[in-house]
Length: 227
Image (cartoon, rainbow, N blue to C red; front, side, top):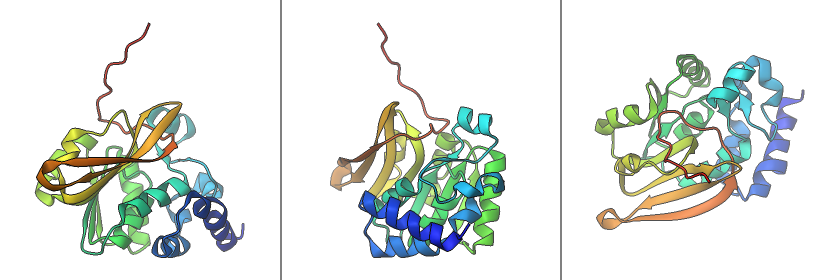
């Protein structure tokens, strides 16, 4: 496979058509080696418009251990509009690729992963790619976020997976002016949502696009009525 051609096609055929036009984001995607964060067994999928399993097939499907599509990662990164002085929290390290992208735009990234094998692989991939300002915490998501309150408040929070609804506890970890992006809802259609914290604890929400993403573990599922 011609890796550089595949990377170019990923950007031009998948990412740009999804309205990712920020030149800084596009340059980062052109230089960050996404293939280094993909398990060897699935490396052929590194630039494909699909979710990439991070653990053996059945386990990845059952536990939501997948790398999000390139266009979804790129769009979420663009919507955060990170600045170099900002501090970021990511829930769901997975492959570590999103943490690497965030770290290149921000001052520091704290990223939480509950699966020991993924935490180990992400640390190794980040180190190989010279990303020194991202810290992987092997911890359950919701409890881990509470435990990192001393590192906050955060300028941005990213949920790299889906939840039934935006966790209110995470909103309290945002600085005034801070942004949170999450994929919320239930299959077959979920929504990527941007939440911004304003003055006097007022929060504004904006829906970005429809998608579907694996569930993040550790967050409650509200009861649903059935007839």
